[in-house]
Structures are given as C-alpha cells and as structure tokens.
Amino acid sequence: MIVILDPEVDVNSDAGKQVLNFLNSREGITPRVHTVAGTQQTLTEIYLVGNTASLNQSEIENMTGVERVVRVSKSYAVLGRHANDSRSYGFDYNGVRFDQDSLQVFAGLCAVDTPENVDHMMKAVSQRGLSCTRMGAYKPRTSPYSFQGLEANCLPWVFESAGKHGIKVVAMEITHDSHVDEILETLEQTGHPTGVMLQIGTRNTQNFELLKVVGRQTQLPVLIKRGFGITLEESLNAAEYMASEGNRNIIFCLRGMKTNMGDPHRNFVDFSHVPVVKRLTLMPVCIDPSHSVGTRAGCPEGILDVFHATSQGIIAGANMVLVDFHPEPTKALVDGPQALLMSELDHFLEDIEISRQAYLQRKALKQKYTD
Ligand code: PEP
Ligand code: MN
Image (tube, rainbow, N blue to C red; front, top):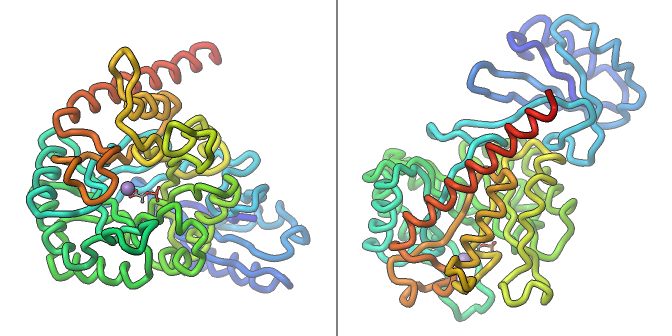
C-alpha cells in the first residue's frame, strides 16, 4: 500500500508526523518514506510493507494531509503501475528530462579507448544538439583475457571532454560498488563538468548486492538492462531492488535475449516489450539496438538491421536509445563489428525522427478514436 501525502505536506509537518505515527503504531506494518521531486512539486509517498490487508484504506484516506492511498497490486511496489494508479513519474537529471513521454538519444563509444576518440564522439553528438552519450570505462568481458576497460584512469579526461562539449549525461556501466565511489570522487575532483547515469549491465541484472549499493545512493540515476536469460518479471524485480533502497531515478533498458532463435542477430530483439514495460511500471524505457542486433548487416533496400530495430522500438514509444558508434570501428577494443560509423550519425538521427513522429501521430490517432 502507498500513502500519498498532499503536495504541500511533508513528513516533518504536524499532519505528516500524525500520519506517520499512526502508521508506525499499526502492528506488523513498516512504513518507508520516499520523496519524489518533480518539476512542479515534491511529493511524499509512504510505502507500507507487511500485513497491509489489515489496514482500513478509507480510514487512512480520511486523515488530514493524505491525498490518496494506492493498493499495491504488483510485486514491484515502488516502480509498478498499480490498479487505478494514474501517477506519472519522471525525473530531471542535470537538466535532461527522463519520463515515459520524452526521448533521449545516447550515442557513444561502447568502450573508452583513446582521448581522441572520446573527444571526437562528444563533439559529434554535441554538434547535432544532443546532450547525452555513452562511454564504457568498466567492461564486463566474456573472456578474462579480453580488454577490461580503462577503468578509473580514464574518468578525468572523459568527464572533462564531456564538459567541454556541453554533454550533460554520460551513461557508464559499473560492475562493482567501488566504481560508484570512483565516479563520484572524479566528478567532485573535476568540478562536475558533466553528469553520469550508472549502467547495470545484463550480466549484473541480478547482482543484488550491487543493486542495493546503487539504490542507496540518490545522486546518480541508473539504467538497468534486462537480464538476457531471465524472465521480464525477474528483471523488473531487479529494478525494484534499487528503488526499494531509495533511488527511484531508474530507466529500464531492453537489449535482447540470449537464444539461438535470435540468429543471425547477436540476441533476440525484444523491443515489442516497450509498451509492456510502460504498462507494468512507471519507468521510462530504453532500447539498445547495438547489443541486441550486434551486427552491421542490412536489408536489400540498404537499411541496416540496427536502424530497423531502433525504429521498431521508437515507433512503439521508447524513451531512450543507447547506441554504439565509433570513429574507427575496426580499431575499437570492444564490439567494433556492431558500431555505427560517424558518417552514419546524421542518417541515424533523421531516421529516429521519422519513427518518433510516427509514434506521436499514432498517439494522436488513438486520441481521435477515443474522443
Ligand atoms: C554495454 O552496453 O556496453 C553492454 C555490455 O551491454 P549489455 O550489458 O547489454 O551486454
Ligand atoms: Mn558493448
């Protein structure tokens, strides 16, 4: 059960304290307070864990300072979209909006290699009016003998280059809790030239201890990838692990599933699940066409499969695209074969715009037939 306080009421006000004391006095009930900072107002939500069936919903709803009470109908209490739950949820991070209506493109390097390539990439996206990119510093590799990423060493020059080109958010995968500290320390030391969205990769989707650490910090938002060999419900529960610890600024990323039936793609593209995740949860949904398709193969009409898959996700309402580019893919240290070329960036962005407009038209069409 979620008790939502009136917008102007916080838990330290008289009304807020009264509600919290009342909930604390119920046997077998543990209240957890979450503050949701929106663009217009800050909302306080109290999540009740335990035997909530024993609670009288209208008694709580009638208390001063309570706006409404939502019965939790899903196992993901914080992130789930519950029955009669019309809440919308989103967040601004470093001036960039993330919610189920917006669209942000994160084109960048799968793995950071040289300062020249990082700068080239940052400059290219910024010249196209984009304010986000992806940069892998910590790379979880299948083979222990493969390049593992430049790790903390590259963070200062990556962040400085981002700042120089006005990049506001860099998506960066982490594989260990110490990486969160390294990123926060480097941001501090370099004077916060940019922001970082932590990325939990598909191999760590169920690394619960890592999820808890990332969920306990609220300075950086998190992108969590769907686990490539587990159910969607299990992956959504993984996101809930973080939210239950306090960080709700979470984006859920579809990146394909591991199955031979996906051949000849690297993974079975699952972007038809964009609307499913938006229906089940409040999270913005990202698609990663690079890691799901995994090749530069194209169709006889000349359009690459990566472009086609991107279009499929966007026309279904995706809110973020995470995509690999590289100035010289043949020299990339990780995932070169799937990287798009810098000369394809304009084409890719224009193609996205066509699909985005089509999605918005489809939404308007639905409205027309609903009125
Ligand atoms: C990545 O985005 O660089 C990555 C390793 O992706 P995934 O976790 O989806 O394999
Ligand atoms: Mn990769």
